[in-house]
Length: 113
Image 1 (cartoon, rainbow, N blue to C red):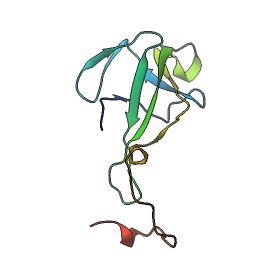
Image 2 (cartoon, rainbow, N blue to C red):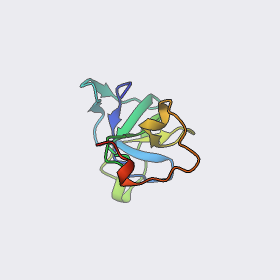
Image 3 (tube, helix red, strand yellow):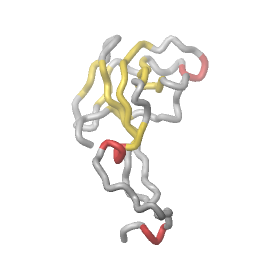
């Protein structure tokens, strides 16, 4: 990762553009720094994922922290992230890359060994 990010689980989304952030007012980011949440602060988040070949390719997003006002299954979380218009994307989408050949088709045989 190019910048420290806070781990989230993108499977825990109370709405289409919000993800649960933390049960507590602080959480340690990927650099080991404790982050104290305040309403409206900008946060960068990630979740482990892989590309088609099994290489690490984190899911990433940015957004704004806000108090969790939902109940039900989300009640244990104190904070959520309202995800920016850029949405959730793979980290590899942030890196410049060569476009695939016109006739390229994914195959496990195309994965580096």
